[in-house]
Length: 92
Picture 1 (cartoon, rainbow, N blue to C red):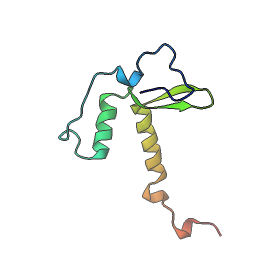
Picture 2 (tube, rainbow, N blue to C red):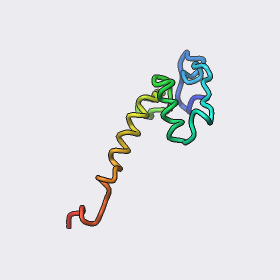
Picture 3 (tube, helix red, strand yellow):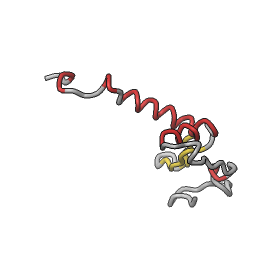
Picture 4 (cartoon, helix red, strand yellow):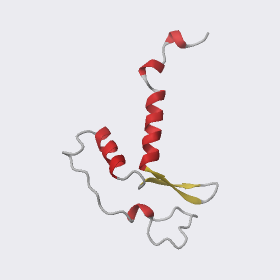
């Protein structure tokens, strides 16, 4: 992974996500995309799931799998059938 233009990794020769050993999840262990996600969170909750550059601080920001699982849970709650939009729930 190369640093984004204008961003510096400092003295870090290798991004954190590349420091973890290979832990492939087989198709038998994860039949669906959702089960693949859950298995990855279970196996490596503190490993880096995503990394992005924060333009304000000009720093790399890591998001671990456990944090992504919490976000997915939050999104699911926000889109639950009980909270689904319907014409009856909209104020005139």
